[in-house]
Image 1 (cartoon, rainbow, N blue to C red):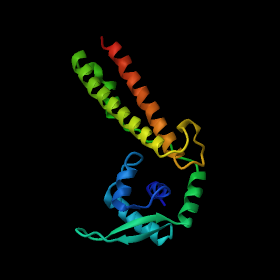
Image 2 (cartoon, rainbow, N blue to C red):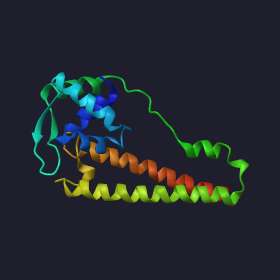
Image 3 (cartoon, rainbow, N blue to C red):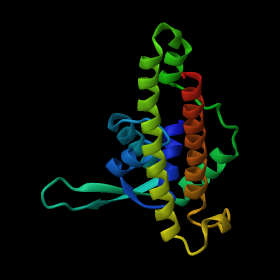
Image 4 (cartoon, rainbow, N blue to C red):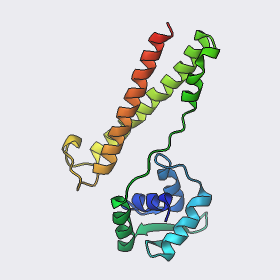
Length: 179
């Protein structure tokens, strides 16, 4: 199985989802298209890692809603124990900054301002998501433990918030460099 297969199983540990919902929820972690997800769901079903039910819809064809099986959870446990690949980084801004000396300071400042606004909006989304996680949790978030349902989402959103804070700090530092 490939990483995307395990990613789909991971998302199913919290809720049953349709293929479309899985495609939407995997995006923050992994770039994937419908054409990748549906064949993988069929393979996971054949292997006994997921099961599905047909949900009738009045104005559309019936949809399949997938759930993880015990066999799927066992596969995830095995995958979690395996070494993790290094993260893949693709950052167009970094490539542009590498050769930023080719443009004047005003153009560089404009590029930086656009990215800073992006980071600020991203941080707002993370803050809203953190509020939503807190609303669904019986404990204060900083008291969550690995066994709590919200723990995984909490630590991932916290990590993402820390990264965006670092990116915003870098934008401030760059503004000083461009004065």
